[in-house]
Length: 144
Image (spheres, rainbow, N blue to C red):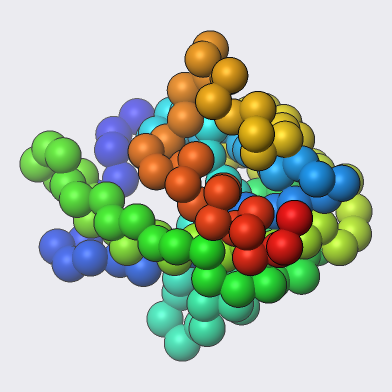
């Protein structure tokens, strides 16, 4: 299987730190980019779509969950690490779980609800860069 051709310009993406009962949802990527790493559900913003519309669509597509978006928790820029790699600006939002149980699509292969203060002790899990900071920021936004 060949790699997906990346545009020659930065792309905007969104992700959600979804909290339920004091825990945040982490999902594991089933394919590149970041295959095998736990991160937040999300994806690319489509042309003409607002950030909130994109976030609700991506979360629904990847996990089947309905969410309530609270606010922007942070952002991260992923620069191309190798020729042909993508350049992304990821806007990460704090959100609350609203309805349904997780049903993962083929982009993800595992999920876990984890207490934010337990992230540091998860040495066996591979986390995407900047994930802990975004989760802590989202946790503060929720007033938890």
